[in-house]
Each structure stands twice: as C-alpha cells, then as structure tokens.
Length: 437
Image (cartoon, rainbow, N blue to C red; front, side):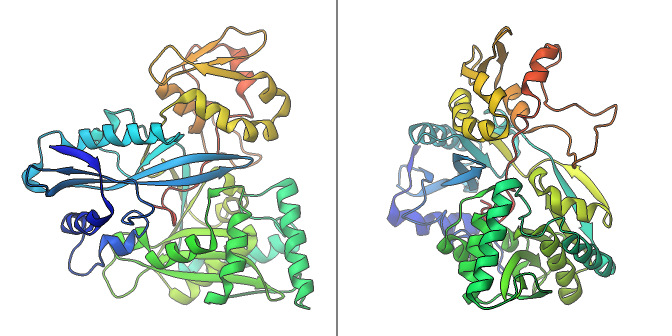
C-alpha cells in the first residue's frame, strides 16, 4: 500500500470515495460541502493507493490559523477519513495518520484537530478536550430572551463589545461601529433591527468576525465560501440561515444558524457561528426562533462567550460537554511559546516569569518558574492544563466536587497551582462552526 499526498488531479477521486461512505442520495457531494478540503490548492490531504494505483483510503488535512488574543496558532484539521470496504482491517488509516503527523511537523503545526473520537485517534495520542455549554432554546423562550437582550443593551452591559471581547478590543470595536454609523449619517445607538443577510453585508460581517478575540481566521472570501458550503449543516441534513442585527444601519452582530429545510434532519437545529455584541446575538437567536420556528435550537457557548452565555443562562436549560472531536499536540514547548503573547497580555508578570522546554515524556513539557522546582507534564496533562476545567461564568464558583482551574495532576504543589492560576485554561473556538472539517 502506497501512502502519499493526494495529487491535484486526484481530488475528484477522493471526493467520490468520501461520497460513497458519508453521503446518501439526498445530500450534495463532500466536495461541495468541504470545498477547501477537496481543493487542489488548499488541501494537504493524504491517500492510500493499491498496486493498481486506485485510491483505497483518504484522510483529509486542511491548514488554518486560530487567533487567541495576541497569539496565532497554526492548526491542521483532519476529517472526511474513509477507507473502501475491501481495504479495511489492514491498518491503512493508522498509516495515513502517521503521514499526517509528519506533514504537520514539517509545516510547523501547533495543533491537529480531529473531528472523530474513535480509538484510531486516541491510541495515537489524540485527546478529548475543553468544556462548552449547550443551551437548548425553544420558540416559547423568544420573548423573554429578546427582552433580556434589550435590557442588557440599554444597561450598557454589552454595547460595543463582541461575544468574545473585553477591554480595549471592545472599545475599539465600539469606536469603529460609531465611525461607520457617522460616515453613513445614521444613529449607531438607535434601536436594533433583525433581518436575513444579503451579500452586501459581507464586508461588515467579516469585520465583526475579525474583531473576535478567539476565532478561526476568516477573510471575506473564507466567510462567503464557508457560509455557502454549509459543511456541518449538510452532514446532518440542515441548512444555513444567516441573520444580521443592525443598529442605525450598522451591523452590530450576525448569526449563522443550521435550520431545517427540505430534508429530514439528523440532529437538533443549532447555532453554527456568530459575532458581535452579545445582546444583539441574543436578539438574533430570538428572531430565528420566531421566524424559522424550529422545535429546538441548540447554542454551544465557549468560555470566551461569557457575555452571551450570561444572557442565555437565565432562560434556557443547559448542560456542559466536551468540545467536538479530539486534539493532538505535536510539540508542547513550541505551542507554549506560540501562546506566550496571549499569556503576556492576560497576566504580564506571571507570563514573564513562566518558561517552558521539552519534557522528559514523549511530547511532554517542562515548566519553570522562579523559586519552584520544575514541573514535568506528560502530553495528556499538558492538554488538560491547556483546555480543561469547569465552565464558569464571571462571579460563579466551582462546586466542592468540581476540579479547580487550572487542571493539574494530583500531587502538584500548591505553589505551582497558584503560579498557573489566571493563565490557564486557554480559550478555544468552536470546532463545530463554519470551519468544521
């Protein structure tokens, strides 16, 4: 079996194989749902080929950038993994994953995101990670949610900020929106109007998306392409609806929702992605509930969505769960250094004192801090420190049975826990949003 990068002229064959495994007669081709993954230009995918040269297995690999505050991570997403029935049981998928790891290492990748959780990935060091909160909304909740959004906006709780912004970033966003309103001769502090988007909204939506503190990087082209592709939505037989909330003619937020269309859905409708003022996003959720009238609408909020989560918390039942998929860290120390700008902006004094090097364990890390013995963490413990811990809104405290953040191995000295508090866990964008692979 020959495992290698898929050549540009072989992408059609790869999509055909993926369609035979993942699609039925009602769904569009995987090539349409994942245009970047099956692109001869952007994809770094691998295939396995038999002696006759025919592709018998495929593992999609797509590079992207994730912004976490002042840090930018090189991230690679793995998906559309499939093997022809006659080639199964011979370890081909494992060989593909090894090739993917080598490719990511050569490309200076910081993280590998895998949409699956099966043993193929966990045996190879991929781990479930992070905590998100799933809120389940119903149309009956819309009036109360809209009222809460209006009250929050009037009280200035979220005006001018985005659902993942605080401090200077939020102020800059407010100033930008005010300037945009002034240039159009409109009142940027006027009442909120919710509507479906038009293509002319794209530049404003891209600006809102780029103002998020924690997100996948998305250009205007990316945003348009990913909205149209409907990657995750089409996998579960839903379709995108895009809504805009504007104030004084200036978009204050947008929402991409996966809602029922002409097919029988495989899962509950859900909010795919959003950006903008938390109160305006909440108003858009109420608008979607009232106009599209799904029986339920799930919203998966991350830690950095605290403004929106605080509004939903009062009105919707919720449950905490893992981020979709698994993560693999090729080089722990390299990732630490890539995160240093984010950590430095968060806690300048602590971040300046905290250093890291390669650990004794495979893919582990050694942390150093003045006055403390070095702390060795293996790959699993490093992932847990980075992303795990209870989902707490501002002002909430962990219960007596909850793990206190940061998450560290049992027996870690209290001084180390204190040194790492307020630095970890690190926020991370949803893996089930527009950039889902």
